[in-house]
Length: 112
Length: 306
Image (cartoon, rainbow over all chains, first blue to last red; front, side):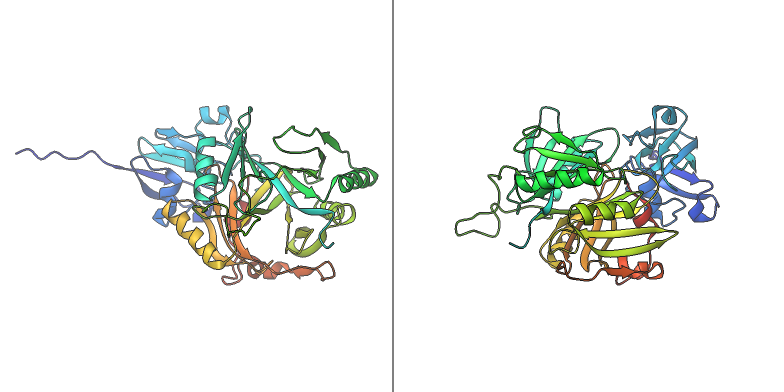
């Protein structure tokens, strides 16, 4: 009888330079179809501010350094089409399709 | 007559990123009644305990946040009088024709130096699904979800808050119920035109026109706890709570709509009269002011806004 190994259902995500972690790289895993920020919050290791979780406030804006993902709709105030083209997204609105490395990219419109 | 001039917050218009998701949230989870959809796609809703036709308007857009906040005033003569006073103060007013929105009379709009659009109006149709008036039941229909009773207030973020306070108190006859010193010259203010601890509030930040939360009233702390159960069941992102504020004394939970607009459900808050002094909060006690039990500030609560 052949044992069939199921494909991996979790991707790894590493946040480099997240200020809440003192800029140490923090890694966690993200389940299939799950959003990066939500899984980060649940992992208990939170290098980024967990804000509105709905793509509206811009607090979790990141640049994807490596990896592929599906992007859900996000506020254009915080992520313009140019941003999207260069991999700048909101972590609460991306679903990984491979392992990811991201770094914080604070929204230019927000006071800080 | 006691309450006159500006009666209460009338309606708020919010931007949402996806109307379908927003309607599930405001109609099914909060339990607002969906009143109508305009030709331009805006959706009008109201709380079950409101007589007036609508109190929340949702507009689908590519960013979240607030479009405008409108107050209902006693009658048209009051609207005329406030218009004169606003203009005498040096504010530019804009007339919006009756019927520009369904069931709504003429409005007078002006911009606050905080970057927010405020409107005043005197006439709105009564809802067919408002509180009963003959041998009334406690609701006109059984409300669902969190069963919010009404649109209660909002907290807006923007610059020039001292000037905003002057406009509300000197022109619109509001009172300053509470103020908090946020440090660095910034303040937070809670303004009232009624017996409520606040009808509108502002926090000083450099960015104009921003939105912290819209609040909906519940009658009991039990109802707030039930709302929390609804949020947890449907995985609605919770910001803070259940907890209690030192400022206004409300028992509260803050959470986010699917577009990232922060909502509040709360019960309580003290009764305010115009002869009451202003309550003041110092920077070092802000934790107690916002989180009466926890006494610790939370970065996301202050720094996250749309």
